[in-house]
Image (cartoon, rainbow, N blue to C red; front, side, top):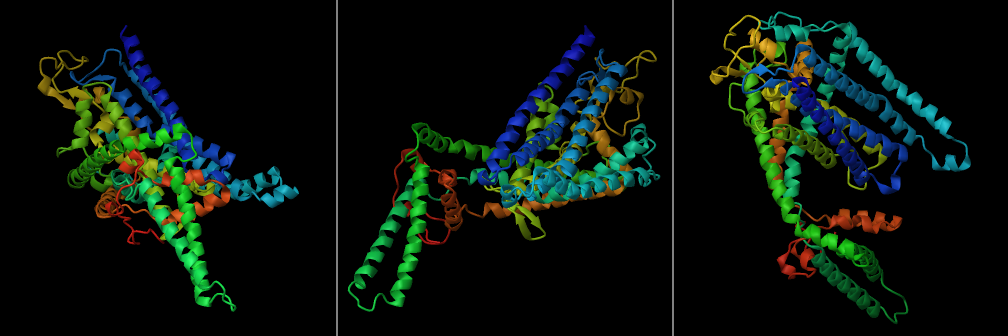
Length: 596
């Protein structure tokens, strides 16, 4: 009966994970088709991007499952293992987790180092003229792409061989390395050592991207939701454009009438002025058509109703932005507290990647997770949402900053306008960032909870040798699990998560990775603060020049409807009426007529 209860609980956790993965697949499909450029869409690139995003999100969502499974083996109130949690059952749970972790990480590495580069070169080798002439077929494209991809295969082999043969640097004499926990971390075979080296290197590379993109995105995501309402509504914009268009055409008529009947034709000055007015007229006509699309003119009643609904529920976006902003500040403060605590009180400092034996200062995020664990499964849902928040912030950062080499923007990430090459590169960047996010959450954001979950142990002496300690009458003797406790009861009860064990193995075997990853968190906090303070004093602008460029492209390709979403809506979108012209500002410093 007890074994069945344990099997039921662990099975429900895996079922919840399977449902989450199914939802993740839907999110990956929506994300890919939302950001991808419709007129540059490639079937191969779309499939690779969807599969890659699904695998990456499935990997990052495995951390809450890891915490849930190890926590389910112990009673947090009694500080003892549950009756069904025999050593054999626990070993089976950990083995299953390791298999899933290694499978997902191996698949992610295969995608990022081989499949995505191959898809990139496959797309680059496409030549429409050669395809039409029949001079280049699929076989030739395949071999060319495979030839370029071999370089990444060699890179993987070099990383594995380095990790296999280079001696681990963490086998030095740290004063706390004689504890059983650290002994287990150092007891790794050659294959595990090679894997920890490779993953440690990738985590460190991802940390640099995480510091810039996720740090900026963590501040920009909530602020963008709060400031999402534009400075001018679609009806007001329509009225403004109509007035400007009427004024433009009146000036054209005046020039034509002034030059009517002249035998020598129109003067050079008037010709230049008329040409400028004609160009401005074409721009205003494009804006007028886009404004009509936004209002839903010529569209179905369902589309117009959806536009009204979006305007009505915009305050919810504002409320969501405020809540995410509070969450960002809470996470920032918690990371700062943990960083200072680790720097000051780590049991072995840089020798083990600043592992913290136990939290010495109140840490709000960690406390929230421990308290919410009393109402199963609230803490696991919160952890999944936190992971998703970091992932969404990373996407926001990449979309805002773009793909750059130093200060030069190579690719721009934009909804509906992302090229296939940019989509694939962004996917690789997200893969590296996810590795860094796993490190940050497990080691900095909620270190105690991410390592041991809700597990506790009883320090009361057992009545008989070989029995579990009994704290039913001594609840004050129940202690949270920690890496530094060497009591037999802690060794028997406390089971660290697979993710935290692997990350600590990386940092203790290769301390240079642990030191870089740890101190980079302070750079992350600095980037967040700079972007956050800057974004508070920047007002959202309606960039009409950018709008004109996009409208011109859409007009050329017959895709005017797709840019209608560029316009927001305020109360004017709900009522469908315009307000007084002086009641709105363009916010771009270009005057009320909106001319570029």
